[in-house]
Image 1 (cartoon, rainbow, N blue to C red):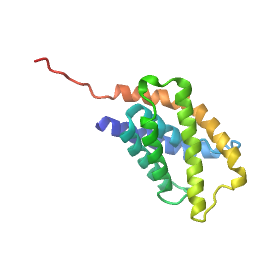
Image 2: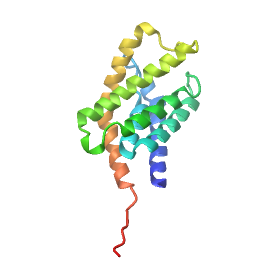
Image 3: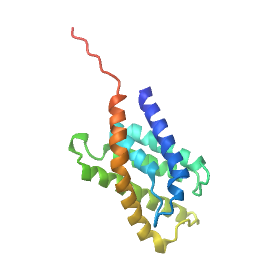
Length: 171
């Protein structure tokens, strides 16, 4: 169990650092690639619903306290929590194919962006102009789809390697 916590803490910390220091400064057209969402969904796919939800909440807290955070405190935490929970139980591990996995990751990234924008709009803050939302959602989908083959297999491999050995006694 502690190995899963360690895996989540290390990968999410790396994802937040890379996103804040590198991905936001690339100047790519459209949305910023959301490595944190890709990592949360990868953890949820590898570990399941509850660890995915916990990883999502932790990732949201990390994103909210990392400068230059511009969203309302708690919005990303709850959004990532829901994404981790849903992605972790969406499809059985044996039924996942590469296109389905990429679709789950890309859909989660676009959903995250949309939910945060809607909640901010409801409370009177607009960090994203609604006339640009379509283009931002499409680029968010594309960037997440490109990041997922780089992140999801690695986290899945690490999760399998760090899984505790189950000892059975023959009686």
